[in-house]
Length: 380
Image (cartoon, rainbow, N blue to C red):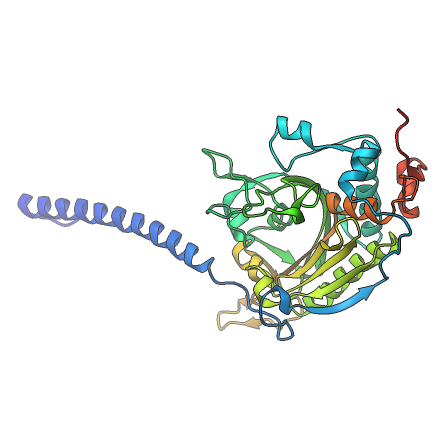
């Protein structure tokens, strides 16, 4: 086109250029579509699993530890629903009218108990070097996906906001995981340890039956979540640290619980290994999950683009005299529940109920409840 051309030849090249531009636009549109399809297919591939993880479904999970023993009652045991009604602690009926099923109002001492659990948990975890956070509770769908959750589909646990690319969070793991998205973290800054308070929202699609009554399975709840970003070779060590923190917290409250090494069929896509904590709930007459701790290795960090540059790796010098810095690596991410409030309320009410209808408050929580030692039935 820059040289001397006959008008007919020039026009021919102009037309060819237009055709190339149109073809390129079409190819770019196809590329976006293919990338989306590739992302969907890639999301079907779960993380690798630790060699010690039991193979099978949930009933193949292995008992890792049993802490304490069930309390023996010499009076008829009530479940948390009956206790809550008699002590005027929550209202499911009014919440059902206002919001729908699986919602609730907390009242009176139950409100104080929630605040006490959150503040005590944050205080204890911060003593172990964790930075406290409150997080956004609405995030982009792409961040949800990069953390290994499916924001759409028939059985999704995620509430999506109509006509937007945003979702309500089901766990603070998602917004905390996104803090360092698309960044290179200084190796000297690792590990990064966060403890985050948030409200969580879950559709609980497919959940039904007596095992889900009351506060055990709800659509909205408060939770304190621990999250660690670390070097690749250290994630197994920090996984042990997280489960030890959980064990210390629940033991100090006087709960009886067991820790399970969950089988492959119960890990979910992001987890390389997951430990679940199941506490004894005497009113429900069964163990119920109150916490879990997961090592997600680089499954989330690859999708979120969180890397670090090893500081001790030898650098090389090219022939042109330029220094080639060490290649970056993906961090490993871990998460663990320090306190899921509704299920902790179930445990505390049912395990610490007294024959006179009152509920004793565990000693560590009393300073956070203004010195209240027990919840008593209201005088009529």
